[in-house]
Amino acid sequence: MIPSTCPLTDYFRCPEEYTEPLVSPASSPSAPGYFAFGSGTTLYGHLATEHPAPAADNPLHDAASDVFTGDGEVRLPFDPAEIIANLRNEAYTGGDARKHLQKLRLRNWDKRPFPHWPVDFSVDNLHQQLLLLCLRASGAERIPFIWFWPEGKSACATMTHDIETKVGRDFCDTLMNLDDSRGIKGSFTVIPEERYEVPDSFIDSIHSRGHEVGVHDLNHDGHLYDNREQFLERVAKINDYGRRFSAQGFRAGVLYRNQDWFDQFDFDYDESVPNVAHLDPQRGGCCTVMPYFIGNLLEIPLTDIQDYSLFHILNEYSIDIWKRQTALILARNGLMSFIVHPDYIIEPRARATFEALLDHLAHLRENENVWTALPREINEWWRQRAAMKLVPDGSSWRIEGAGSHRARLAWASEQDGNLVYTFDSEPVAVRTVAQAC
Image (cartoon, rainbow, N blue to C red):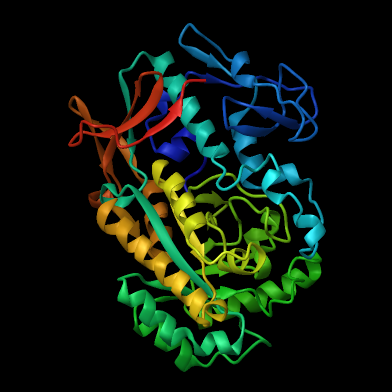
């Protein structure tokens, strides 16, 4: 991972000179809490100008009104690096204990004010709002940055399959056929111990067909993170299985997670953090639809509802929620990531729903320029992009670094009070992404 400088340069890969106007407060004496930053953006952390709210459902002070701009500076009432880390690492949950899903806990789940359902963009909104402020303070007409996805793709979609039972394992060949029929490759994450046998021939069959293998916990008993000593014993075995399976990625059972311990994994990426976790046993959510680094580990967040939650909690067998989420994420040029278990799509109604999702993703690929990629491909690209840099090239800029031939120079500018993205070859904005604060 590239050492962090300003959060905006990490997120946009833009020249640092354009983010120099940002000035954070020297200190914030108040306790951390919740506050707003423009419409649809909820933040958590220290605030220098007001006492933030202790709960997300309290009236929230809009800190956008506290921003001072003048003399080429943007003086913020908070430290954006702290706020972004708090959301991505779910610090706002206060280490809330994990519990099993119960109907009582699910009551009014869709009325919870934060994270925002069905997709939370708070981290992305903050980056974009800050870049808009920098654009104004710099006096530049536009700011160059390295586009989020290779070859100028509008967004990215990735399919993962967590295998939970022997029945699901035995259905994987059929599932690969379904994926392949739409030109989509999937990542199959296996539970190494206790649930079912994982013969080398099974792993080889996935690799040989161009799909990917990941490690899904150790035995999926829900106790991976119960205590540090047990975790270290288990993670040593998990890392060994990763090497045995030639797996680059890991996902914990039931999406249990403790980002403070992620440095013990010998994987390139993790896939255990949801964008919004209202329907999961562990509450929270990273509030972003972009991959991000936790130390040297790339987090590829889960941004779309799981098939289990869709079928067995909401009792829905249509792709309406998936279509709503993908439309929102596409409009923000983000990552659409899915978990579809082979165990839950064997019966005809669920299988038909999954096939409709595959058809929808194929449509997005062909008609909306969406990149359908394996997690390992996302990992490779995001690491390359993080190491790229923009250097002056006459009156413009060029991208340098490994993989730069796939990268695209993009521009952020203001139009009608909004931040918009453009390419030199496309005069029309790619997406309107943020309104003025």
